[in-house]
Length: 556
Image 1 (cartoon, rainbow, N blue to C red):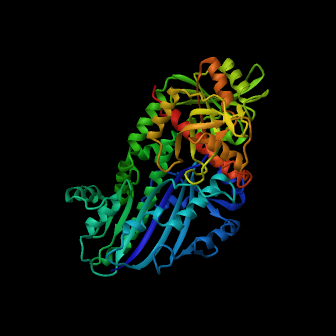
Image 2 (cartoon, rainbow, N blue to C red):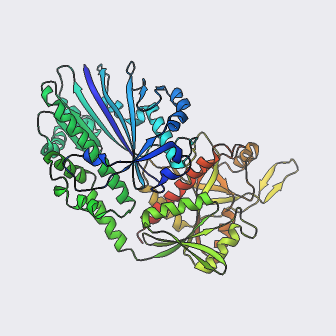
Image 3 (tube, helix red, strand yellow):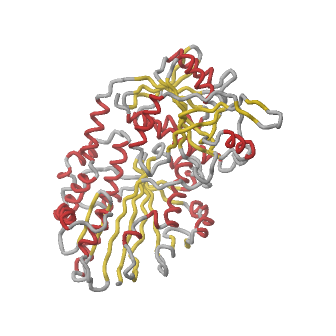
């Protein structure tokens, strides 16, 4: 059976801040252009002026990817690249468009009409799954990492963020199967559906159909089909398919912004709250927008989040502690996505702090420490002073750590301290072996409860979160043998860092709840300098994003 297939994937990811195209290497990797044509692609004169910045890749961008392209079997000097890995014997042209809406990026991946000849073992479900198109997925992970880090040499991100697939199928031969049922199974990503369930999916999509072709829309994505018996519907179906993809992109962007508690413009709020009036000059686009709005629960989410922001009395005061500038900026940027307010600096007894604002029901402050636990500006002194000056209810140290197992862990994985192992206090035995004598304190059970609650709503596509034992000591470990010796002494350790001892001791003295939430930036194996900036940026941002998610998920 032969088909002509068109594929799109909308990959939606939140960025630390909106003008990220002006940071680091991004200044030379992209030319920002106006995206006013985006709204025209929706059709019907939508009641909005919310258009993206288009990040147009430069020649340097494509030159940077030249080695990567060869490794993953892409050809071509500029988009579209040609890939031969979509299906055996098929060359597909892969185009990528980058749309930046404030702080939310849509990476739109397109494979235009490609003829394929399939056998009985073929599955459209597999080719519409971006994660199963391994080389294309790796290309997207690399591009997102370059943008996030502002670094041409950035290591690809570990997992793809939220993906909305769209597929258009035009058979070249007469069908001998129930193609409507197959398309319902494809859009819902369920197999062997009951007829009653399939009928419900078709019924909810009935309002926007205009001819014998089919466009199905679900919270999972879009499926379009032109039956062999109705070739005259192909042109109109293609236009409605393109409009639907643009509508889904706008809805997905708004959903990501609402979930980040970003304040929407008045027109965008009206699009959501009055969907039946959003696209006055196109009946089909209007019906599609209404359905997508309902499928993604935009109105309900906006109403709930607005209510939460307007009725959130302060229940606690949280002190966030960082060490490096990368860690501090990650906290500030991620908090801003929720508060939409710039932090304010203030000084108490010659010590500077940052008032970050209110997240959920928590008033948040930032304290910056020097590296290590001891010394004049170390974490013990810094946290002790902050406790005296600010009297927080809880202290959370946020930042970067080293991992201990490259096989089971990834750069960017988030480590949460259920316990610390203080490893500086040691006994050197007669046979030169080492016995650790340091404390093994437990972090606050209350905050561990907060963490586990936050993990329930933490998207699977985000960085992995592990709760367990973390090593803490004054040494900056960058030696494979010493790291493995610590791992042998403490087999359950998830990783290690340098400031936890000071945080724990200062909070113990003042009876304050505490915890460490740090993400892996290296392996303490003598190679810390390799991709240092990009890996530290990724780790710091992941840890900060999870902490903000945690605070935002607290209800009381």
